[in-house]
Every structure is written in structure tokens, then in C-alpha cells.
Length: 295
Length: 293
Image 1 (cartoon, rainbow over the protein chains, first blue to last red):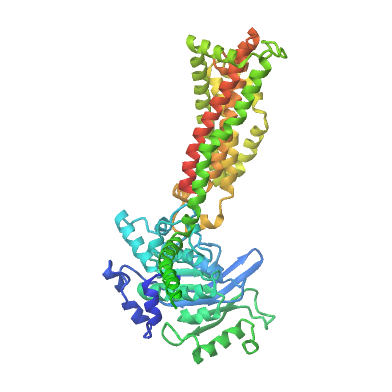
Image 2: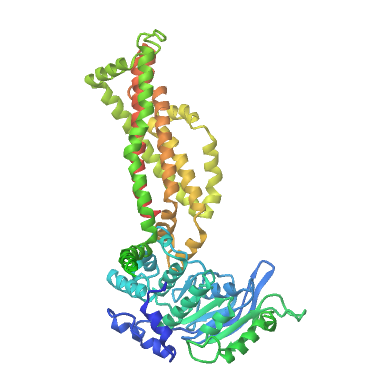
């Protein structure tokens, strides 16, 4: 086992879904942690969001509402604007058109209500894991409160005994968990994840998906997850947003938009082999232009 | 059967310590893997000091040989090492030597501090702000293109032949290597790390102190060491041109008086002082790199 977090193994055993995971205490030292202390989940409202780079339109007419606490997977072929949409919601990119509201007010530059987990861990190589995670703390926190919160998060992602190490001394999966802990440190209302597990090996990725479900069950935060992995989307999300072009329609405008928006049935963690998910998987693959029957 | 039992027992008894070491290695694999290497590298300076002394000792021996009895060089061309040493003792006893060294060291340190400080400040400004870079970089580049000794006549005219003009010249010499190192390093800081820093609410001075400056620490120190070497170079230039004390003055005065022994003494002292200051900076650098890189 690479993952030492007790919560992961308990989650593997649990068959009653997210509710059971939520009741699993994170650690003995903080009994209150199981009741989502201080975490908020905010709704995200997109109206007619678009983004062009010069003459090239990447994204157009994206309108939807993401409910508080929802996990929305954003799926699409590469280069279709998934990351662009995510960056617009986080205020990392200010060039988009249309309106993006978080909790009813417009997104600010590098909006504090959101936190981003990047595809690369992007940890500062000269800082310990502990200090990298504390980078994500809001400035309003006192030092003691900050220490307590970082300890709690390192416990949550199973990195407590690696806290003193530098990023280059841990594996890619651990670095990605540290990155997730850093994103959670400000207790974001909306957690934005940009293919966070894309660079990991298959086994580590599955464990990270379980960890994310665990984190979501304990924090209840809204999650927007960009992925190119259909199974990951089906395993994690309440809804799957498929971005795509209208390839068959020559009169359609340039740029990707909402091709499909699917509800994923069943409570998490889901049986990866269920027939319902298989049907959805086929639909998503065909939406991505891949004929699932030949695979 | 009897032979198998001891073997299996040995296996299990072996496994326990091996497992615990494996566990420890897994816990901090990077550290464990590096510690022996580090220890080996750290051993070198002690031994490295001795190895490094071999060539100077050989040179000294060669110097002594060619001056001792062969008659290849006249004492004016190349005095013997012991003559240089006694010249040093004589100058030391009169107090002149300490004065020369002190004033030279003071000029270098003042000039280096001013030049390096300005280089850090301007390098940071131009490295971080695209507007400042577009506005100022062509001008700084043009000044850099002027061979720094070309400023000497102007400095003498404007500032006069006193301490200020020498310190300013040394500062000019120290400025450009530091400026160039800081500037180009800051322009090449990993944009992904900077964006991550911004995404977590860092901007301005806090972003600089948290992400950008630590990222450029190695380049800054190589710039500082180059700047320090330049500072010594410009010290001698300034003292050769116009001064009444200092090691550069000692060089010039000794040449005029035919005191080759003192001339060689001044060169040896410049080598020792230059190496000493560089070593001190190197110690600071190693500490900084341990913290930030």
C-alpha cells in the first residue's frame, strides 16, 4: 500500500456510500472534523461563457448552474477548452466573455472562494511538504490555527509522516496529494481540479479518486473536475459536462460548447462495473467521437 | 531437515532488520540516498584543502629553486620568496601593510555593497516588471556596453581624486554581473510556480519573497561572486590610476622604486584577500542553497 491514510482503507471497505465515509472520523486528535467544520460549498452560475484567443474561438455559449456541493466532471477531447473553462471560473484567466457568478457575485481575479489543483503538483521545490501546504492557508488565520489546519490536512491526505520532506523526495502521487491539501487549506467554496490525476499511473490514480471522494465527503465543497478519463468522470461526478464542437453541422459557430450534460446515477463510491455506468460510458465515448463497440 | 531450520531461522531473523531499514529508506528515500553522498562530498573540503595546497607549494618550491643560485633572474626581475616575505614583515612592522590592506578591503566592500545592492534592486525591478524592462533595459544595456574603465576620466573630473570616485568605480564594476544574473534569472522563473503562487493569493512583495526570489537564489549567488571578482579588479584599476594608499598603490609605487619584492607581495596579498572574500561569500551561498534549493 502506498497510501497510509487510514481513511482510504476504510473507504475501500465501506459499501454504504459517501454518507458512511463522512461519518468516518479523520483523526483522533480532531473529533469535530467529521462534521464539515468551517467548510462551505458555493454554487457556480455560468451564463453564455465564451473565450477567444485572437481570431480563434475556443469556447462559446456555455451556460449551466453547478449546485453547492455538487461534483461536476468536465470532459472533452484535448484542446476543446476544458482547462480554459476551469481557469475562467477560478479567475486565473480574465479574458472570457459572458458571466460567471460564484454564490451570486462575479468571479474576481484569482478568486479567494476558489482553489485550484493543477495537473502538475506545482510545489515549491525549496519548501517542505508542510510549508507547501501552508502556502494555501488564508492570511486571516493565526499561526496556531494555521498549524492545526495543515496538520489536519496532512492527516487527511495521508502525508503526516512526510511533512518535513521536500517535494523531490516524495513520489508523484504524494506530490499530487500535497497539492490537493494545499488547495483545501483555504477551505474553498469551489474546488477546481485540472486533470489532477492525469500524470499518475493507473493504480495511483484509482487511489487518488477514492481520496478525492473521501475529501468531498468530509468537506462537502463544490468540485469542478476537468478530466479526459471517462471512467474517472463516471466514478466521481454527480453530473458530467461533455464539451465538444458540432462537427456534423458546418453552419455552427467555431468553438466548443456544451455537447451533453448527463446525470450519473447511484451514490458514491460506485461499482465501476455496473451496467448503468456502462451505458453512460458508451454514450460519452460516442460523444467524444470514439466508437465504444470497437474497443 | 536439521539444516533447513537454522537457514529459515536465519532468514527470518535477517528479515526483521532488513525490513526495518527498508521501511526507513521508504520513509525518506531521498534523504537516505543522499546522506552518504553528502558525507562523501563534505569530506572533500578537508582533504580538498590539502590537495588544493599541492600546486601552490610546488610553485613556491619552483620559485625558490630558480632564485636560489641558478642566476637565471636578477633580484630585480624575480626576488626570492624569502625576500618577499621579509619585505612583508618590514612593511607590517612599520604599519603600512595593514593600512594598505585595510583601505583596499574597505573600498572593495563598500563598492561591492553599493554595486551589488543596486544590481539586486534594478535587476529585480526589470526582471519582474515588463513595463520597467521595456522602459529601462535598452538604456542599462547601453551603459553595460561601455567598458567600465572608460568612466574613470569622467569620475575623476566630476567626483575628484578621493575615496568616492574609487568606490563608485568599484560599484560600477560589481553592478553589472549582479544585475545581469538577477534580471535574467527572474525572467526565467517557472511561470507555473508563479501562477500557483498567484492562485493562492500571493502578489507583489509577498509573491517576490515566497516564489520568485527563492527560485533565483542560485543564480543570484553566482552573480554576486562574479560581482565580487569584478570589484577586486576595479579596485586595482582605481588604485593604479590615482591613489596614495592601498594594494594597487603599493603595486605602482613598488614598480617605480624597483621594489619587485613588494610588488610580488602586493600580488600575493590580492590573491589571498580575493580568495578569502570569495570563500566567505561561498559559505553564505552554501547556507542559502541549503535553505532554498
